[in-house]
Image 1 (cartoon, rainbow, N blue to C red):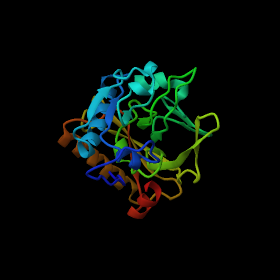
Image 2: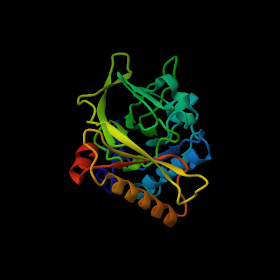
Image 3: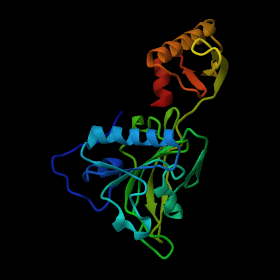
Image 4: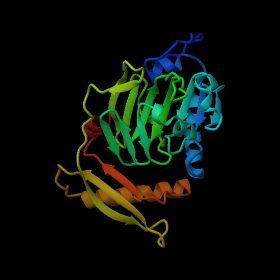
Length: 276
């Protein structure tokens, strides 16, 4: 996990922050976790929030998404709020609705002119404060960790971030970064300078892992770069992957019931160039 932050013994609160790094320097936050999903989602969201809390702010409080009455406006919020979970798994974000400068639902994220379809996308963003108006109660500036899946925050802390006010990641890592621009009407829109990170097509070989539970074989998709021809030892590589999954499952005492994908890279250099 990488955070480009510097914590000092005495931090002075700033009226606004430009990046998550600046936000972290403002003082002890309050973590607000989503509870709108199922039990598994709620547990995962809280676990990710607690991981960041224990690492950086061990005295910070973790509260659920019913702790803030959005109708009372920014004054009802705790200082330096960090929200975990998208609107589909976080009641507080869902109530903010149109006042948010992005749209997220299960399997879809829309931010500015960019759209992302699927469960794999994650958004880490410093959401600018929005003043109350006749249509919306407004909200303070807050840091958001959310994703299009349920709960969508799996391993989100491990995404290298901190220096950009907007970061979108997919299953391979950092995908697109940007910043906020304030419009004349007081709302904010994103600006993306660089194109999306390079992504390549993959060729899939389907297998079943029967050794753990023959009655319920686990579907495994072993993926190879499509631009490369199949190597002579490809089947050996596939069987090695399956053995590794089996050993890991036995040592951990369980295995995911969902389909698994294993991405096979030709060398370490290609991993670095494609995932950062």
